[in-house]
Length: 472
Image (cartoon, rainbow, N blue to C red; front, side, top):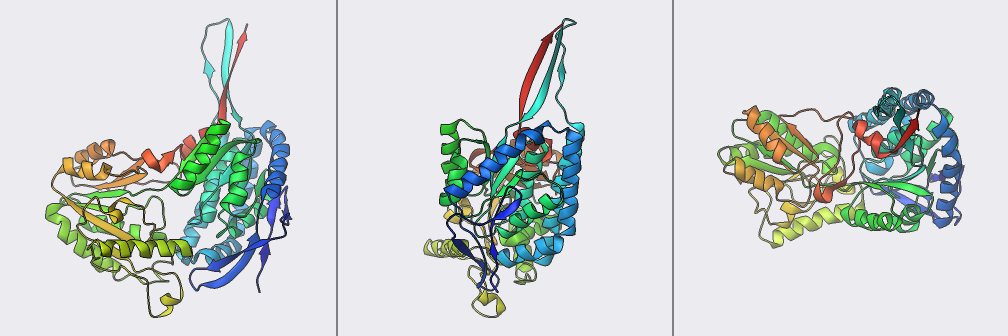
């Protein structure tokens, strides 16, 4: 039976003004899923009005009071994990283990910012005994959070937790293809004690709901994760309105492997980039750069490992039909250029995987760096490899991209690994598998966007600094 999901506005489910709903699809089976409200300018107006009315009282609460509410939201996410998991699975086809990880991290975002909030304040500035000067962190007011389809709940919580912690109200516009878990989150948060109007969710398409939300005069900051073209569109709106943005726009991230590295661990990292969410991760390191003496050995090990990956067991489907077609178009384009994969390079045409939007894990070896598959973000289980002769060429290849989100370096010489990491144009670089977690700020250089998510830095994205000086 098809279930209809309404907007969440002012602490309650709210039918769309138009009365229209949009279909969804289970990408693992291509069967129809639930329907979600088709949002419009009128729905945006109602949601922004609810947020604008709610945030001043929330901002006046102490950090300790807001912290307690954020902890209760984290509890609610953990208690509602089964429902959240099923809603995410139905529209993304994600694997059970990955869903558990993402839901656990979603709760952890609220716990982290609840903790940071208790210890993070403005500062005093010494201007002599005749002045008392200090700074305050104050909210913007209404935040628009436009989130993508690849990690729906997780990336919503990544933005919502610090935005609410800083004293803002939020209107979230999730992808129309994967909205249900964000709607559930809002309902759980309200039940956990988040005051009505602080978290509103308007569903619908980008043109009908996302653009009016970004353009609304009461929205004072925008955060967006998604494609470069949509990011540019929203950035133009923000620039015209003189409101700040956080943009996370994906990448074509390198993983650099030297011949003296722990090759087994480096290979595992490369395979994980293909298998995790079927490569549909903005930070996936899908350009494998290997020092020439080890290149063929590493490629052989990667190919052997990816050929053991099983659809529906080790990796999930491509989440949207449009993205599924885009990945296949990349394969056709490479073939037309005379470049064939070592393994993969097609959808499944038999077995259970053929019923869904599954793509065979794919490796292209020793590809020219100017090839389209070597330069564009494919957003699927596709890895391209390139050999390099020395550290200088490794750095040149790593930086030969319009993007700059993350990178990985594997080297037996730690000094060389750190030296290279400091010269790679990327917002995050892991050396020999160094941990990158909620505590570590995340964001890009170049066309990967600007602003930072995660870490204390994200709290600064959602707060304005006010300086107050008193003459004594």
